[in-house]
Image (cartoon, rainbow, N blue to C red):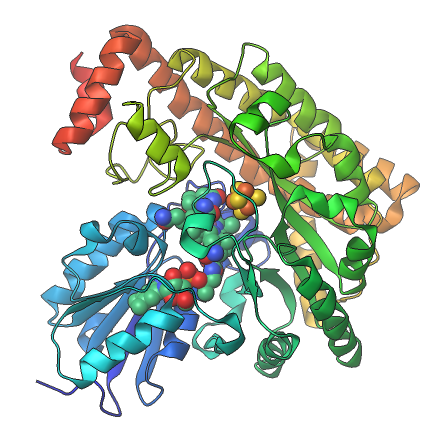
Length: 551
Ligand code: B12
Ligand code: SF4
């Protein structure tokens, strides 16, 4: 057998597939701007940079192109990885690679959280690749045919490598990610990030960030860069150091990029930081708002959100030109019959268009999962996805435990809020609100070729939404209002209007799916439902839907 450490070893790196029905997979919007998928596979580009550079690499992203037998025939070794929703796709990649006689290496968040599910892989590399990939390479050198690698230590981000951005086709994606930090200082009960990456945020140096930006620039990439940090402002001291350096670099290079990221809501308290972010052209920030109810926030230990008036905080962020994209959750223990009303009022009043309302999901290895297990309420010890068409993300598969309130009430509240916020009139009201309050000061301007593409996308959008019976009037009213009252926010507002195409489709899908679930529970009764769920997860054979139809 070939010594895999040799020069010329062919390494196939495969990004496993996400469901097209996820909130995050706005493929219709991608098509509108000529891309195929929202985000590039940063984890695997990083892995490729950590593997022996004398190898020959081919990266296939199953979300943008079909994964073919000939890809496996070409390869000596296959690397794949991913998160929970990619589980089934990863299993199938492992099988296909074996059928083609390739060794398989798996890693990433799900194999790290639930390594027992991936025992069929030859090499199981857990945790942060910066630490465990060298252990794997060491074993390859010794001729080991399999192995499992983990580490209790966290990676030193100041030693992180530049991802192999050269392995992808930029035009396939709307955005490319880079990572500045890992970890978050807070301690929310449901969060897996602090378990996987720790509560002490570790950052790269400003020089490392610039090196990554420069690499992307030299490879010809321009446009949207997403800082995929767990909490970009987790280490505020360091963020204050990196932003001016990015600004200087951007200025020198004529602002080739604009940015988005994730942050905790206390960003709104820090006008100086907001200004620094606006100065380098940050345009979007994802914030975990979860719930407007203080009592729930206390229960789930989301201390950073307690006593923050959400509408005011969002407005403050809008005033620095950043659109707030937020996560909300239904299914916490001390919710009441007022929860749905409080939730929809919070979303509507703050004008948050991109509201990802999910059902609480006890992710593997979190404080929440441990508590629910102790209380005998967790359906399954770990998370295996069986039905890829319905178990996609927190919007379609949540509540993997016995809820404190009757499950039907939680699900009905969920449907009620989703229907409300994604009703066209309400969505466009929020888009208009955002358009009127946003104070952008965009620095990046697209090239002429890109402008043409965007103009084409805009005209397609006008046809699709502007000449549509349901949305036409709302769309033009929004455009005219923003154009006259706050013209500099028009580009951002049009983008929000485009996103409605995705949200409208998604919300219908979620409402249908959840309504079916409600009907099933009504048919069999909640007690029986819970019994079936426990039974199903224990047997781990049939899917819950098939059990329910037997009732
Ligand atoms: C950016 C991000 C997203 C983006 C994804 C963009 C994309 N396509 O890449 C978006 C916003 C779309 C997203 C959505 C979701 N995400 Co997300 N996401 C992240 C986040 C913040 C960063 C991911 C990243 O790029 N990291 C940087 C790279 C360098 O790290 P990495 O991928 O982990 O790779 C390293 C190691 O894992 C390892 N590795 C990875 N792959 C492999 C493969 C091999 C062979 C080897 C050896 C090693 C290895 O080496 C790398 C270097 O250290 C992580 C948290 C985090 N800190 O990682 C959550 C995270 C991955 N997401 C998670 C989840 C649950 C989701 C959602 C289901 C729900 C949600 N949180 O919204 C959805 C579903 C998405 C869908 N499409 O259906 C969980 C996964 C938990 C799990 N056990 O699987 C995480 C860990 C945290 C969280 N709760 O959000 N996410
Ligand atoms: S603020 Fe976000 S990342 Fe930080 S612990 Fe809470 S949920 Fe996790």
